[in-house]
Length: 319
Image 1 (cartoon, rainbow, N blue to C red):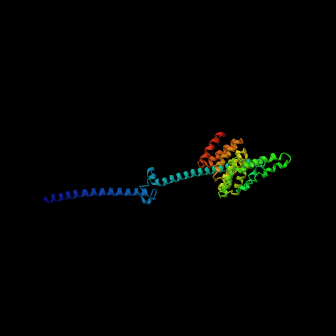
Image 2 (cartoon, rainbow, N blue to C red):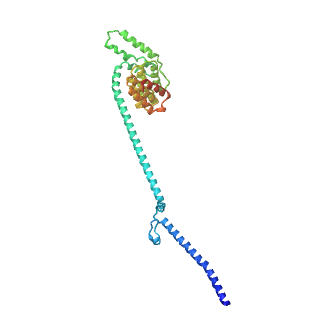
Image 3 (cartoon, rainbow, N blue to C red):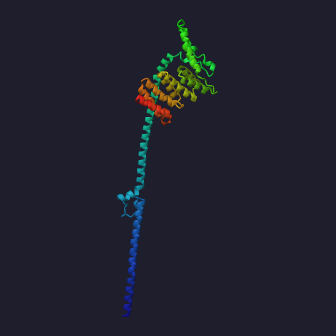
């Protein structure tokens, strides 16, 4: 009897000890199964749509929208960025082409405007230069030396030779008076030939001896065409014509200075005075073009006195 009881107790103990082991085996199996499924999920994430050999038959690659989107997000993002860059590049290319076209059109308009101005002034030059041939040589004779100033009126005195029997005394008196006025103008002698030549032309203009000043200033431009003094001389030549009441010749002189020496110190002044001369000729539209070109080419770089005078001239012309 005691032996039977002992055997039953041992069996109960063995069964009680085996139950936790079986439970533990089941838990381990579940964990291993879960780990295998997680590994397969990782494989699906790394190799979306991969070969079935990587998975068991009942486990197919997850084709849901969420999973597939996660797998292709970097590619989709890069594609979107490339598309955006291409769109921006197309926009910039279009803007560049438009700007280039507008620039070419402006250059064509400016070239056409220059050609038009040259054509308009070409006939005027021939007309008015012939009208005053005798007056110009009056100042052709003056040189940087005092002795050369006296023969100035001799070419003008040749005009009465057509009528020698008229009144020679009356013909010579105006020349003598003119010569006296020219002789009153002091000839500079600083030693700088270019400066002295221009200063002498300036003094003749200041004395309102416009024909003599014009001849002197022309000599300066002809002799030193590339110097900065030529810009001053050509501009003052235009002003001498303008003050003498010859706006057509003045416009030609101003335009030549601006066209030949656009970077010269008196180029902005000439462009402004060209507008003034054109306004005096009744060409208000052309005058306004000259004032607009002054603003476009020089703008704030133009001297303050030029901008002030241009504003007054534009208001007067009604631009």
